[in-house]
Length: 387
Image 1 (cartoon, rainbow, N blue to C red):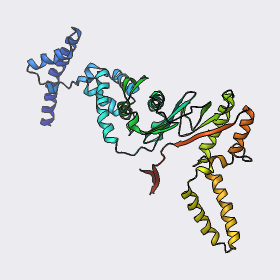
Image 2 (cartoon, helix red, strand yellow):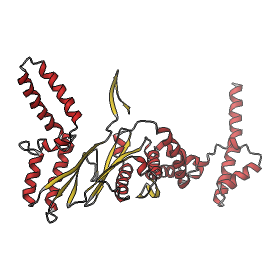
Image 3 (cartoon, one colour):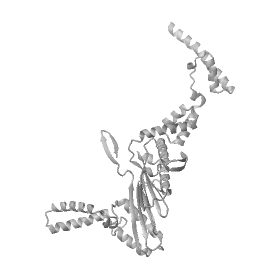
Image 4 (tube, one colour):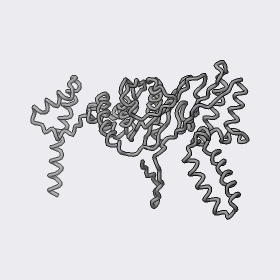
């Protein structure tokens, strides 16, 4: 009983200086004193600052304003909310200083994430009448691939590749070193100014919290009277996708209309995405590839127990089927399987009044060469990625 009375008395006596201290703080605020001036006044007195229960960030910035600053910085940077709040607190809720702090942190975090495999992402294309450039920008998840900053960077890299010096080759594949040291001018609410490609990729990696890599690209062009045609599959917006098909069509007559070539060329580019051809014509299939396929077919035919002549016919028939599967000009046209690509080009030549040839073609898919293995463990499924 006596102990409870003592506690109550101590509590009441301790409350008075506390109330007096808060009253003095209000008086200073009314006179226009800053928090730092008030803190200096406290330090010159005998008041125990640890007992004031004042928190600098909460005394200067109301809770509603804190939430507003978190929202603004989140919109500016796309950084995780936890990191946004941490930077604001450490920078005394100065949003510009916090944004700078986030960028510094992001470079460090991006470096730590750089060893993680990035198998998702997007292809971006930029083209004019005679050339097209396709680049692949990778990330770890398809969620980040839908991020507008990530998509903007991919498109910017494709435009930069197209505007870079002409490599002087009709088909020019390149790796990250071709662009990473070039300057790119960015104009996005969350990513602006002129910087190197390597720095821009690092900054976006910091924003999205994943490993982001510019992996590869190629430039395709035509020097004759012709067109470069493209098709992008699974497009979140024009010029972006997960699969790309490109071809060049060229007419012998320089007066041949190019709009018909564009129309048919786009359809053949879509065909390439669907059928995955490996060679343009039978003549371009390497002798080793043909012999290897012939050996496989001969072994299969021998198990049938038929005569030698019958087995040879089986091998030749299946070899023709092989050419129809891997050679573009021999493939059945996906739009009309009663004809093949060679016949489509012949019909186009009659339409424009000039012979039309298919010069080059290319097919690219996000994550090619990076394997994904679905691992099922108990109740959880996860993708294990490896190069």
